[in-house]
Length: 527
Image (cartoon, rainbow, N blue to C red; front, side, top):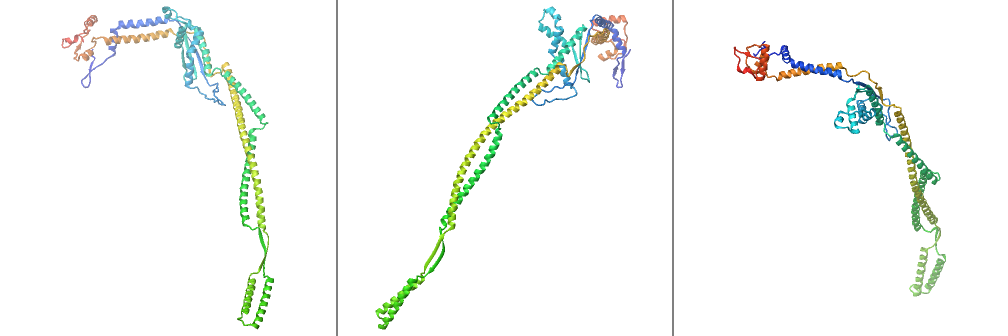
């Protein structure tokens, strides 16, 4: 049969048909039969002699039925309310299920560490710790823990040759896991801690209240803050009075200075009446004298000439007398009447009054200053006492708040502990493990898997042997490898083919002979 075809460009195209595949199988049928039936026999023997295994199953439901308050110093503990269970929470519960301490507890309770391994028969007995560690590792590899899709369930399976042991292991795992869940999600010692803190703050509150009571008795039952406020009110009033007194003192000093200045410029007495009159007696005497002198001159003129010395002397006396009369008439006698000045008297009275008021104001200012200083000192003392009272009140308030806080926390811890004791948890056993009665391994399944494995291995061995075989089997191989046109292919007889193939394999030559122009080239004897 010629398997060579030519394409549109004249290239050679070799077709690999089903006949070629069957030819490969027939060429290696002995090896194929041995490999297939050998593996299939092994699978049948394994299915017949394998011990039965029983698989127990348990399921756990992760839910949000219980919300524990968060342990925090806040008055109201925050509660995170979520209806759905996250993937992280499911993974956390799975990790708790396969944690080492949980598996160790299961191993010890079920006695899985009492079985001896093959290495102990060879190397001698191992220590209990090492035997337990190996049993924990075997249990971890045997357990199958996985979440069920689109649900809050966790499936746990365990296989064993003993059905009672398989169920007992899962029951122990269930109990150990519940205890581990409680221990992880509920811190140990909450009740004792909150109870101790509650008692301590209750004692502190009683001591603080006793100190406040003693302090109040020292103050005669009146709060220092109230007394301080009243004292500050009085202090402000006295300070205002002191400022007013000082203002009055300054005003009085200015008034005294003004009155003293006015007193220096105001006359003590005032002229009430003033009268001017001539001196009648002097004028009358002068006039009489003038008359006598004139009479004397007249008498002298009767006797003597005007130039006579006596006459001239008389004229002179008359002139002097007239001059004296004229002078007296130009200087009349003044008569003044004075009286006490009422302004001067009022100024003196007001000055005296202002001086007396000034002394009184100074005395009042000094007294008021002493009172102000006394109230200031009292206010400072009351301020210190008020600070002490506020400290006591704050201490009482803090102790009371802490006492109430820890009291509530203690009750919450007691509720949590009670819920743990009654197994009211966010994890529940959805399916209790039962003793399996039907083995999980089926011999028919083993035979079917052995058949598939035998077929796959047989095909792999045949194709590997065919690929490693250096002989030419078809004209297409000759044309592809040697690039020589094949005109005809004449197969040998079956016996000669077997003999030639055997000799050719030994000599490294081809198992078939091909002729070209009635002659076989030397290059066709082998690759």
